[in-house]
Image 1 (cartoon, rainbow, N blue to C red):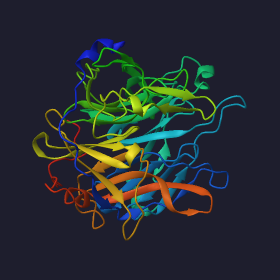
Image 2 (cartoon, rainbow, N blue to C red):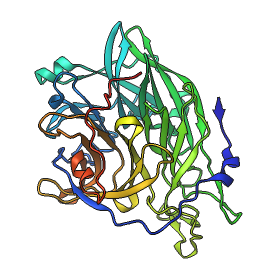
Image 3 (cartoon, rainbow, N blue to C red):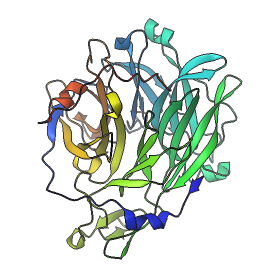
Length: 438
């Protein structure tokens, strides 16, 4: 099934109403990774999205994998120490774009070359591919670099019809991976477009390829409650793209953050996209705007905001993550990049909003600003994070190095988040196993 031209949905968009939201609660991170710098001296490294691989035999040895865009990929221990660096692929020729790693996720137990293999999957925005890296538990235990490229040589562009089209850079962007029984899938969004594609992973002679299962086009424009039409803010020729995504593999639900629109829920029915539902909107939803060509940016006309936006997310809506608890309970987290907070919703039912938190300066780390990607695990990770772990991208790592702008990842114990709320969130370390794909 393909879902496109969803203008018929706009009359049925969920309206968010009620009293003003409470102030976000403050939490602090316990560990941070080394700052990276998006300049020549720093290898043009710009941290963006994290994933966590849980060591099945020694959870305290689990690793964090983070994308660095043009600089590729870093692997960290739970103490924040860098264990491995993987460069993005070079350009195939002088006229082509080099690799650029945008988002990352992990699947467990994929059958590769006759062996159950855990994979880190990366969206290569530069080359419009999905890159696959096998995770070697023995290498983790021995302190050796644990990731090895196992991408099939014939892996085709995810969206582009030709290599020339790849260089237009309307390419693989956001990514969310999941398993279902013996199969593994990845949902991939397209840069500068509203499209999301579902791919199934394939074993191609011991290397990882993929094929398309379904395609979804989210709306590019919306009919507002007052009958007027509104198109989200974007550069000329671009549309409201999706980046942050997560799949609740127990519930078979994809959550997709369309940056200037809000947070979508899409049920997955037999690995096909069902009808999307907009469960929350950014505050800027429906606000008129103009494009400043000199500054190359959109300018919102807030004086004429018609008041149709939500109350919990400030554009861009970004990283999404699922905290699992028993009996379908738990939480959906979404990064509200515009106000440096994270919104928390119930995982079950209609995804009711519960509150927001901010990762602020603490004794060990600085706070988190302009966060892109995030991930959360409920299981104990040794003595470092015995109640689970939240990892967030920090778009303004401090202290700064002169005029250089740094980014990194922050590691926060889940209990710090859960206990900060007036009505404490659940801490459930036992009911969900990330390796259980049934």
